[in-house]
Each structure stands twice: as C-alpha cells, then as structure tokens.
Length: 173
Ligand SMILES: [Zn+2]
Image 1 (cartoon, helix red, strand yellow):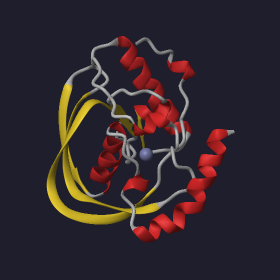
Image 2 (image 1 turned 60 degrees about the vertical axis):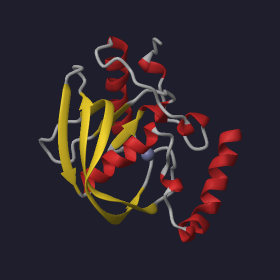
Image 3 (image 1 turned 180 degrees about the horizontal axis):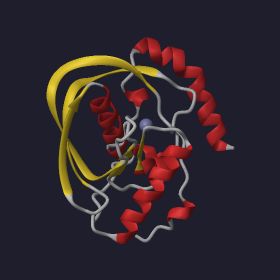
C-alpha cells in the first residue's frame, strides 16, 4: 500500500475513484501521514478549503481541512466519522476541486460532531455548526463516493448539465 506522495494529483469527475467507498487506514502508518501532508499542500496549491483522499486517487479514509481563520491550523482527519448534532437543514452554494466550474446549492444538516485521528494518529473530537460543519460533511461524502452533484436540485441538474458534459469529454481525452 506504499504510495509515493510526490505522484499524487487532484483527479476530476468522472474519475471512477470518486465513486468508490474509501477504506479504513492505519492512522499510525508513516505512509498515511506522508500522504496526508502532501494532500494539505495540494489543497493549498488549488486554493481549496478541504480535500479528500479519493480526490487524489486513493480509496483511503482521510480528508484534510484548511484553517479558516488566521491562527487556525490545518487539520488532518484520518478514519473520520460524523454524527449529526443539529438536524435542521440549511442550504448554501458549494464547489469542489474535482468538479471545476460547478457550483450548486446543497442542503445539509446545520451541525455535526467529527471524530477522527490526527496526523500523529491520535484521536480527537470536534463539534461545530454552519460553514465548518458543511465542509466536514462535504469531505466525508467523498469517502462514501458521493459528490455535490448527487445532492443538487432538479433545477441545478439542468443548469450544470453542460459543464458536466464538458468534464466527461475532457476526461476521455
Ligand atoms: Zn469535493
């Protein structure tokens, strides 16, 4: 399972890996840490605020999150699980590094608790609502093979049809 982090790059829809359910990894594994570190770099290079392992071609249960405030560190989440704490749904526009050019309104529960292992392999629990909770759910979806285009309204489906078609064409080239 050794992966060279230097070979990783962000993959776009409709890459089949984006539809796979990712599998649990060893949070103490050196290679897992190296990959997570590289994912943080790739996320920043692409000006993303989150990135999940399937987006770099790996079926591993890892995502990384960018600190959203000045002193907030980036966060590695290995084998994460989510628990809904505030089931009331809110809607907000989301984009995805694997779906360039596509932005759609997505409804999600407002608050969640996130349990995961950090880059040291140590377990942690955090809980939030609003924007952060939304980002966590977006990234977690990737580990289940789900994308924002699975959660969009029929109207958005029509609006994004052309962009999706173009992504499919680009992928075959
Ligand atoms: Zn995404």
